[in-house]
Image 1 (cartoon, rainbow, N blue to C red):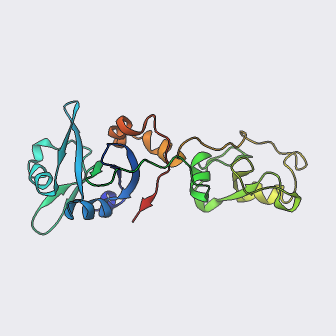
Image 2: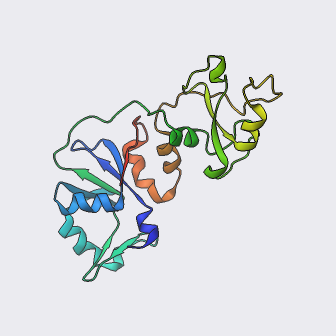
Image 3: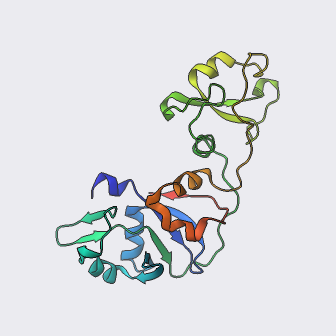
Length: 207
């Protein structure tokens, strides 16, 4: 399996066509092979569903592939990486609470230091309590921001105003998963928008 295909994500719908998870490509194929899920494919402005065998047969028709389609190659066949799958027996409602964690904070702030305003790789970023914990600051959405290591060290255990610094924007609790918000910007996942544009739910990426 190519690295690019492994890096892709697959949207999971419940039985009622409501978005509930995002999983890895490997996990998606496992669900399809066990026949507990089916592929949902958007073609010619309509959605079609396929089980594992029919999706494999369709994948053999290379003329149907779009340029951006990713393919998994095995010893005996090639199969297209799906963008969306639907669980056959799961009908629970999606989660509405966005989990408070490092990954979602970085995504909410778009990997941008909230003091200097520069975007940086995650290896150069840390989390900062606007009101330091030593002064009663809570570990909450409205008090924790993404900060580069340099700005974090400069601020130290002070308030931003005491350090002569200003927030790029006020931290707030996101209404939906910030990781999902970033993913939806990509044309690669444009078919997801039919199911998640108005939804507020938390991604749980399963390997």
